Image (tube, rainbow, N blue to C red):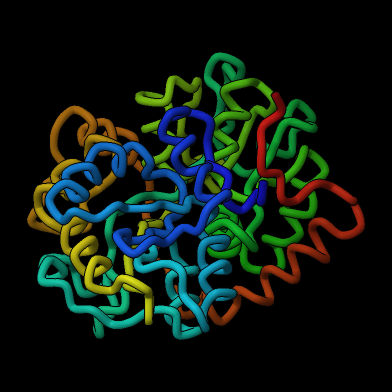
Length: 357
């Protein structure tokens, strides 16, 4: 089976089986709409898509992978698109727009998305807001690291993993955050030193929660929504955290939202537009806090006990702004630099796609 179609996490077996079937059959059918999506939102889709399918009489076929991987696949298929809707993280949503994958679509439900959280022409808009984070297994790591320097301690040798920046938005976020805090050159020096403690790197980020929970690693990158959801609803032993640049400073992070867009010349654009309208509707957005996400619409509150958990997790954390256009300008160089300066000739696995059985 082509590993690109594998389900990102082993936390929803029945739902995963439906996804995995896509590897053995065409993802598009005449009565289907195809969604290419970054991992992390499986529980939301499971909750809300059956009502859409019943109302519209159309099946939603889903391909889930790392945020960069779904964009790479759509790029390969650009001349003959197989998908209708794309959900991915920055800077990959900007990459998709830059290479002409997205068709501007001004959904009526984009009106309550802040201007800073959407493209002016409607090429994409924030679907689920989120924060970049790290994670530990609290049953194993009793004393959580507080600073980036803490991870260089011998106690973490062979116990760290993070997702490949070339294929995962959360992996690229590691470079974005360390560069913002340390400066680019110092960030790559730090990542080179950190690599001495890294066990491997994964193709997508979702696998890392499984590996943390199974005590195969002690520390990983992630994002707040996915980590809280996996801990509460996935039965995994993980706890999200944020790191400080230096001791005594506040932990720091940035927003890392899931963005949604219509794929240009997709085979079922009419249904694709309806799917975007539906996912951005107030009814669906009101369910986003259930999976520890933040609604993309400002008129839908971050409410309920799960919303309170998100607020508590982010309390006291310093948020920094990210210029995603600048990230796009640097992305290719950062990726190459990571491959040459950080990984080098180590032979270390950089695209792990399945936890050990």
